[in-house]
Image 1 (cartoon, helix red, strand yellow):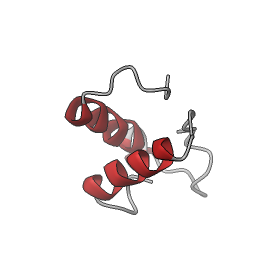
Image 2 (image 1 turned 180 degrees about the horizontal axis):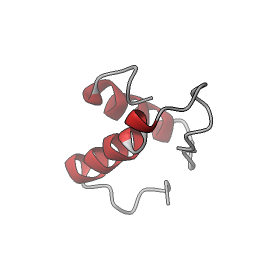
Image 3 (image 1 turned 30 degrees about the vertical axis):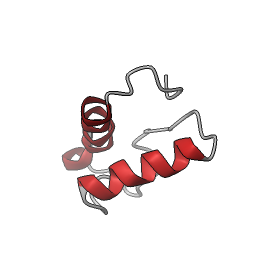
Image 4 (image 1 turned 90 degrees about the vertical axis):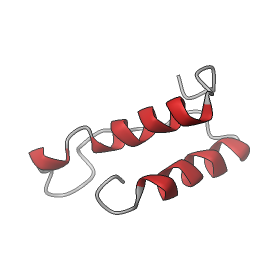
Length: 62
């Protein structure tokens, strides 16, 4: 996710998903093929910045 979309778009996608009942986000690096070490952790950084910005630490993503 993180190398394809801006951070704000990622935040909007998380909000959209939660509003529709999503309660799990799989951030495995196995999906981009081939996996690249330069992208490791990018999705987690977007999720972390969303948590900080939204103040939704208790959201069902955990």
